[in-house]
Length: 59
Length: 464
Image (tube, rainbow over all chains, first blue to last red; front, side, top):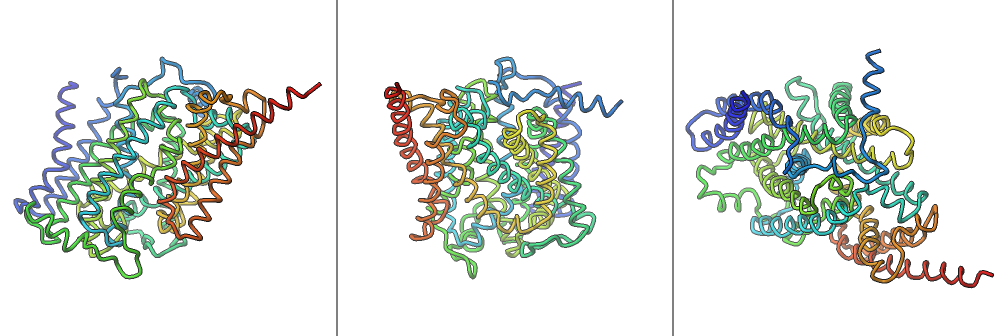
């Protein structure tokens, strides 16, 4: 379960950055880049708190 | 009954304000990486980046100045602040009380606490410029000094309430929030910059340097602005957090570090926030034809996610700043629970944030607050490392039971007076004064300590 949530978080981060790069290289429109970025943001903030602060790491 | 349980929970949060942090409560590296990355990728980065553009920094001066200045800032955290923080594991304020005496620390804490309030207030104001976008609230322009209307005030109070609540819950909660926000936030900065580049006619990375040189960091200042060089950028990057590193304010945070080397974790915040984010916001400013308001420029490049980033960027800086302000003021009233102090501090901060002048004057204010607090950092450094080598007493106020020790008081006031004279007579800008100021303070404290402690010893010997 934790692995799935982490993968979701990673997808959220990818969706935050990648659309802007695709827009920069003219593969997608500005509107689509902004929508995908918002999706990435929502996915990140829903999924990341479920695993990021759950364990007191001992690094 | 429910209210009482919340109060009990808040009362049970132990922050070790007057005792060293126990080894069981030390934090790992990741906690500091997140904290620094979040704190220094702040709402103010949206203001500072455009400032460099307005001051006509050339692209070469910007990149080289940021690299050198940021490295020096990280080294200051790692070699000056962190070893002392992990050596004593006490808050800055409790350590100063031992060195200076309670009465002098009350003055210091008041100055420190109020400055932190205003700094956090500027973060709130930056966040609020973004909150208003989806609700169509008329937000103040950077030229506005007074609250622009009830919509603005309600927005600021909404943002301030949430920030204060998180800060009340203590470092643990602040750290958790910063950890979650940091990776996403820096990606939004980078993404927004990428999305803004086509507006400037940059369609491949090969064009970046040439077009940025011609259209962003042109080397020509805007009308009425002074010209910035490599030295301005370098000293700005090094000393914009002067209060935190050589001023020792981050002792309160780094005392939780398992190892002194965690001071290097400041590099995450510094190089992501004070390098990538300043460059990104400079690009956004140029793409928005010189507009500076953080919320709208981020929204135009990255949509709603960009606006959320401005809110969160302000939030992750305001949180630890309100936390620090709470600690500072609590040093004056040690019997009052920290969360209650933080609540009051949060209210003052929120009231200050209603005035857009706080953002307008931000750079002058940041420079001033760093300089005002820096001499006490030099006092702590000398007291910790140098006084024992000179056979002088550390923590002299505690040792002699003094309420007001004149050696650090003279150091603080004389350093600031000299810096003021240098600024007013020779026209040396505040950011250039940190380096000579620190050495002046260190010298003053050594000389004053020797004189005061010898005088005290002589009086004891001559006593019948």
